[in-house]
Picture (cartoon, rainbow, N blue to C red):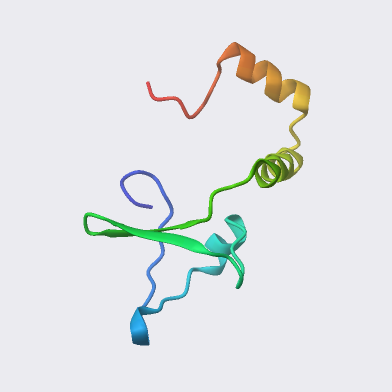
Length: 90
């Protein structure tokens, strides 16, 4: 984990600047051999992001996470309306 609490992995850079994105990251982000990544530099960091989500892809991703975590739509909507968000800063 890095200081921000994000999972980190070490990878080796090969010829022509190539490296392998860890399988777990590819799976979690739905990255396959045809995925286009947007790559940019932020200070000393290299950021690679999958192309922006479309509404359909976003909805599919949310539904998948809801099923995986056994969350009902009604419960999710209620929590959003009440403003109880684990991710909000103190």
